[in-house]
Image (tube, rainbow, N blue to C red; front, side, top):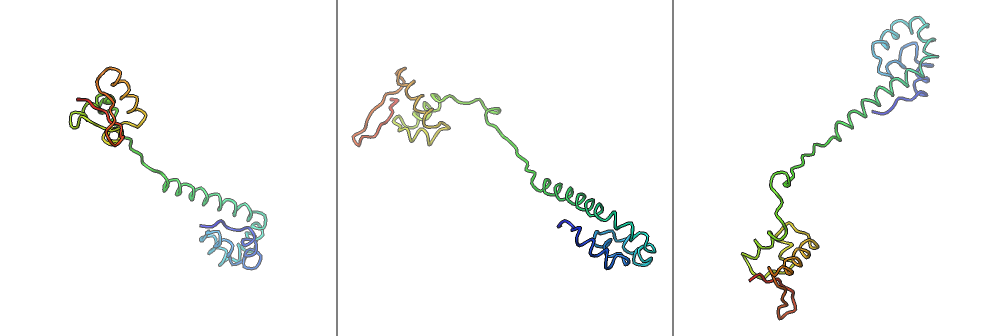
Length: 152
């Protein structure tokens, strides 16, 4: 809904105010009907509106602006449900994830490890370095020049 204009309200007040058109414009239908049948409360209400119409328009706009904001807030509220696996299952260490993979295939590339575990590339590299230092795996280069990690 658009805001009401003071200019339009005063225009209606001046030319059709005794019939209550400015009241209908501000959606004060009951007062509009009363003005229509009483000639603006015998002109007294019409004259008082000269001084109060600006505030009536402001009040209308403020009332409807609040309802617009509430509607947009209600429409834009999202429900976010965080389901963290950390709280449900203990996090498996990088070394353990890599050892589980080597049970299936004793030779793995870094790409295989990142693709089949929850590890990021840097985390997997650090874990492989630690495992190599402990003698759990060894680095090998296949004939095509690809670096593999062997756990056999």
